[in-house]
Amino acid sequence: MLAELRQRLQAMEKPAGIEDGPGAVPLGIAAVDNVLGGGLARGALHEIAAPGEAHLAAATGFVLGLAAGGRSRIVWIAEDMARTESGAPYGPGLDQFNLAPERLLTVAVARARDLLWAMEEALRCRAVGAVIGELRHGEIDAVAVRRLSLAAAEHGALALLLRAKPVNDASTAATRWIVGAAPSSPARAFEFGAPRFAAHLTRNRRGPTGSWILEWSDTDERFVLATHSVPVAAPPLHRPHRKVA
Image (cartoon, rainbow, N blue to C red; front, side, top):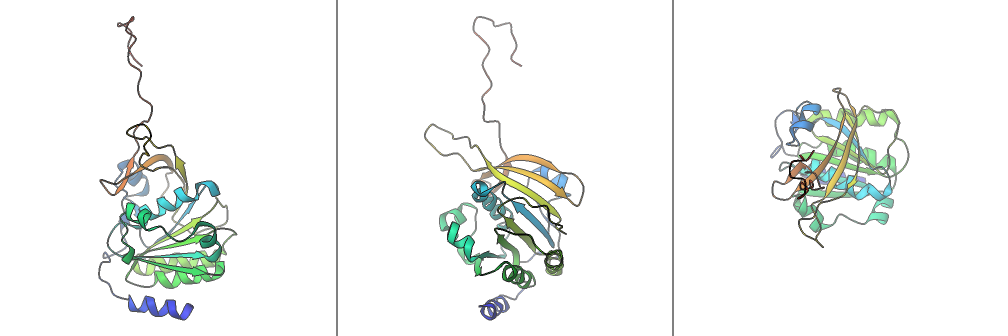
């Protein structure tokens, strides 16, 4: 299986579609991009954790939104147990995040150490713009995390480590996030609103941290700041002189 993965990555080895230099992936939201110093740094490792298993789908959607920008290929590596519990990536869901199936290569591995090795190999492929590693349980050796950061820096790729719960192990990650689901705001009754994410930046090597409610916009194909979901009360009819706070 590992030899087959290496062959597939070598076949993809070409610079087309990869931006020159690491740079950053802007979210397009000034409040977030300013904190990140222009956007999510390329050529670096970023960790995204769900607050718990119930929020793993939201954390996964956030990761897809970060990875889907641009035209380059994405490698998504997950342990067999993750595939058993959550299933394979869902086509219509990928389409919602503007991710064409031909851009995505999925890999299933038996153990966490295989996942880390596969991530490192994929990050060294010049045709890959982002590598997602879905790790459910356990801590990661500090040396392995360092190797991921170095591999990401070689070709300016995004290394995104998706975890099922927050961890406190040592890490060279440029950022650490905790992302869960937030209540959506449907346009009409009995409809589903756009997906919303409670995104908490808990570690940022560039300094500032923050928390935001983000919404995925199908129209703009990117995250936007969610508008307030509670309407402002109208002034009472019998007290027209009172101002609304």
